[in-house]
Amino acid sequence: MPSEKQVKWSQLRVGVTVLVALVTLAVLIFLMTGTTGLFTKRIMLRAYVDNAAGLRVGAPVRLEGVDIGNVVRIRVVSDPKRVLAPVEIVMKTTTKYADTMNTGCQVLLTTAGVLGEVFVDLDCREAKGGPLQSGAELPTKDVPQLQDVVRASQGTLQNVDTLVKRMDSILSYVQSGQGSIGKVIYDPALFDRANDVLKHLQEVVGQINSPNGTIGKLLNSEELYDKANKAIDNVNKMIDEINSGKGTIGKFLKDPSLYDNANKATAEANKLISDVNAGKGTLGRLAKDEALANKIDATITRLNAIADKLDEGKGSAGKFINDPSLYNNADQLLVETRNLIAAVRKDPKKYLTIHLKLF
Image 1 (cartoon, rainbow, N blue to C red):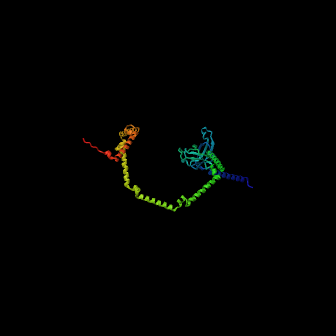
Image 2: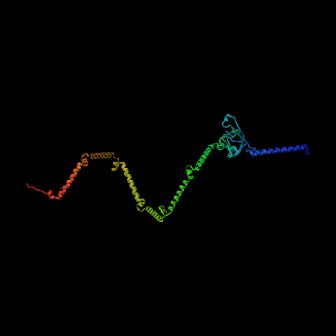
Image 3: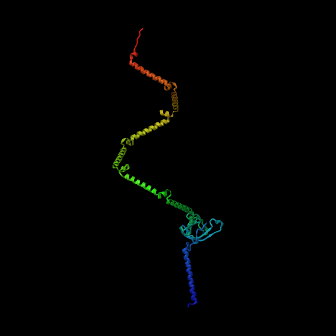
């Protein structure tokens, strides 16, 4: 039977073993869950947000995706100055990346994936300020959370639901054979008419493929093909002759002298137009001389007045044109003259006898 001293010694060894195991376990847990290291210098940082968004104590603090610390405390403060951002987040971070961190770093509450945990992300890419000191307060930056996205998408989901309901109503309406689309799908008479149209089209295609009919001959006649081929050859020959400068059209397109003459004629026409615009020559004076234009206008006015008098029967010419008695007298004179000439021809001695008397 062991003595009392041996029992106490055994109990002491068991207690020391359990204590060492607990310390070892605590160190291992700290090393496995902590991100700052056991002997690394750490600083405390604070930030204030309007909503913790599910952030928990012990959540990682990351700098550009690299773990640099943990959240050590989350609480709601009753400071009147913090009405818009009453949630205080206290973080413990390492000073290992102090050269890239300053007082301008922004705190973002970010979710790892869609349904992952919420952690603190520090954005120091555009930060400007002095080195971070323990207890410093960092500004925050709002990041849309999952609930914000769901809340913003509720209107879209409602619109989609309304659209789906309307589509279901339209499909039901179509399936009942109502409306244009419903009749197109379910009306047997329309199907029969479409079938008849297809039959007629098949008949037309058959007639086209047959050598009978205008289109069939056009497609199947070798003689017509030969004529068309010959006509194309003649056209190609004509184009070749034109390109070689033969014929009237070829000379017109290829003869440089014709181009020179046309260019010279154009230049002379431009010069003539310039002279006319400048008032030179007869045409220029006609176009530019106001005195000549006035004279021509006066002459035309006088001619119009004479024409009006002639129409009214005034003056000798007017009476000659408009007086019927003058026309009748002249006509009678012509008749009598013709009668006289006829009588002279019939009996010239009667009218051409010469009597001489001597004193």
